[in-house]
Each structure stands twice: as C-alpha cells, then as structure tokens.
Length: 251
Ligand SMILES: [Zn+2]
Image 1 (cartoon, helix red, strand yellow):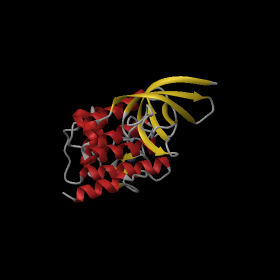
Image 2 (cartoon, protein in one colour):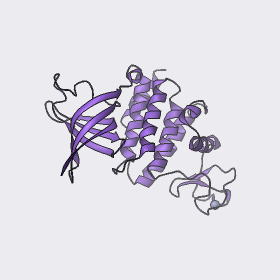
Image 3 (cartoon, protein in one colour):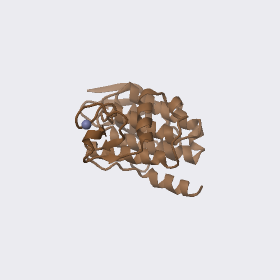
Image 4 (tube, protein in one colour):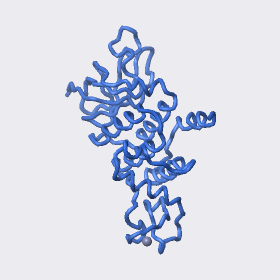
C-alpha cells in the first residue's frame, strides 16, 4: 500500500544518484531516519532544485510504500536553510561533524521528537556563531542518550556504588568508576566528568557558556567517540573531522 505523507525533516546526507536525481538521508519528525529519492532534483526546473541542501530543514512530502526502504520525495518547501551556517566555514564543519555523529548513532527508524528538536537546537546554536565546541560536545552527549547509549556518571559502572568525586572512567563498562574499582579504569580529567554532568541537566544555550582548558573539549570528544565505538561495536566514521583539524591548524 502506498501512502502520501508530509513531515518536517533535516537533510543529513545527499548523494547524487543519477544524472539528475538525489538520494536523501533525512531525519524526520514523524518517521525518524528515512531515505528518499528526489527524482530530477538536479534539474533547474525541478521544484527540488536549490531546496534540498545538506542541513536544510524542510517540509517534505513523501510517497511511502510498505516494505520499501526508499521513499519517493514528491515535493518540498524549505523551513530553514541555516544561511548563517553556510556562510561560516567553521559553523558549517561543526554542523557536518554533528550530522555525521547522528548518521553513526541513529540506525533504526523510530521517530523521536526530542532527537528532532536536538538537531534544530544544535543548528540554531551554530547559527549564532562561536563557541562551537561546548555545543558540539553537549549535542553528542545528548544524542548518545537519546539513541540509548547514555554514559553513566551517577553510579560506578562496576559495583553500582556512589562514585563520589572519582574521575576514573571505563568505556567498556559504560562510564564512571569509583575509587575502589580503579583496576581496568583510566583516569580522565575531572572537568570532563563535570561537563558531562552539566550537559545532562542543561539546555544548549546554557552549555554554550561553559569553558574547559585548551584542548579539553577535543579530549571530551575523543572520550565520547571511544565510548560510542565500544557500545555500537563499530568505528565512528567522521570525514569532516579532518577538515576541522585543517581549519584549526590555520589559526
Ligand atoms: Zn565501584
């Protein structure tokens, strides 16, 4: 059975499919992650032309057929193009890194309104300019949680006890470890534990103001990446990270 639906959605990826068509990976409000073909989208006369850009928030109409993994996009209007991200190379690359994280984390197709609103919150914050690192790290922390891979920071992941002010960490057991369970654990900077705790309870605009030491957010990022790789049992591929590294070297 074929149904026509319309949903708000973010463009997470667009791949050229044929001479004139695109295959889109979308995160939609109503259906979660979906793939859709936009036929003729690269033709200047197409109603999709110039509308289905990476990161754009669209209102998109889809024809869905039961049992088929690929929907057909029939028409779209732009809700937000995030122009201020597109004109700022830093904002753009941080946005791409976040989107790549989502592509790694979100594999099922269950819709999650909090996830949809997280993406919108991240892009709004990146639109507002620097600082990008705290927003990116908090976004990843929240996305991990929403996709069922929360980092444990309230109880020791080995004995279940109160971790107190410990900053011992074990990616395999899922997070913080108390001082009595220090074997097989690594010591990470206490500031990173504090940041993760704060990120849990705070909105993105509150997290923006948090400062870590030079390189601290990159350390936090790498700890979350390692955590995610252990629990997803796969490598987190982030092509945009090397672009960011090249940009940062320029400063
Ligand atoms: Zn313990």
